Image 1 (cartoon, rainbow, N blue to C red):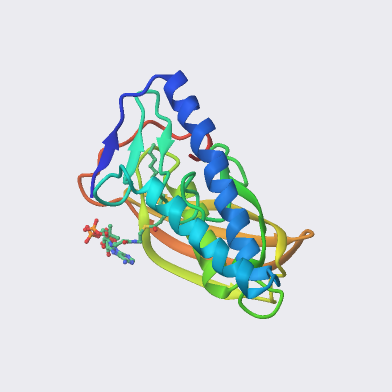
Image 2 (tube, rainbow, N blue to C red; image 1 turned 90 degrees about the vertical axis):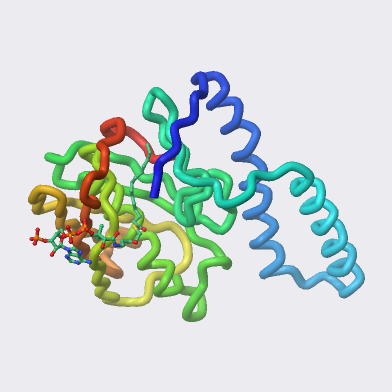
Length: 218
Ligand SMILES: CCCCCCCCCCCCCC(=O)SCCNC(=O)CCNC(=O)[C@H](O)C(C)(C)COP(=O)(O)OP(=O)(O)OC[C@H]1O[C@@H](n2cnc3c(N)ncnc32)[C@H](O)[C@@H]1OP(=O)(O)O
């Protein structure tokens, strides 16, 4: 499992963000529209053909496999295919994790608005999506020293259904012991906790520290 170094200038990095962020945002809109549309069959058939044409145009030049986790010389993370924060991944909720400091009471948090694509129970967030969001925010909180840490265990307590719409996740890391970090988080809607998570995150043996994390993910 390797992180890839990408030798990009800051200008080139920002250029790529400016090119791909709107593409992903447009695709998220499309996902939402497909779930909620009530147009006639002919319009759906025509849209299907148009989408196939767009897909073929984008496939004209592609990398062989997944995007990987890249980072620039300045330590900018480019986990752009990531299932939760991927800048080029439309199935990722548009989540940006804001990292503080390991000594802060809340070491990382994220605000996100989930729409129709994340539904489980009617009008509410799918339990797997709740777990997905927790995993990323806890993992980033645990990795804030610069040593990437992976999920060893993750326990979620679903206290009440989480409605679709805006929500916040707050994570903290009460215990750090060598390669192991205990991380906890809460999911909040209008200030009320709907779910809690606790996980043990472990940095694999021999893992090299990356640029110490600060600021926002992506
Ligand atoms: C700028 C670029 C950005 C980069 C972003 C990066 C951010 C990342 C954010 C990611 C966010 C997304 C998050 C994701 O999606 S991470 C993806 C989901 N998780 C995985 O795929 C992890 C798969 N498992 C492994 O890789 C290994 O098993 C790990 C690394 C976990 C340990 O393998 P390793 O060979 O290193 O372990 P060890 O044998 O030396 O044991 C060491 C200690 O740990 C204890 N132990 C071991 N396993 C477990 C367990 N499962 N539960 C509890 N405890 C466990 C063990 O008893 C021992 O304790 P002690 O005896 O010392 O007390």
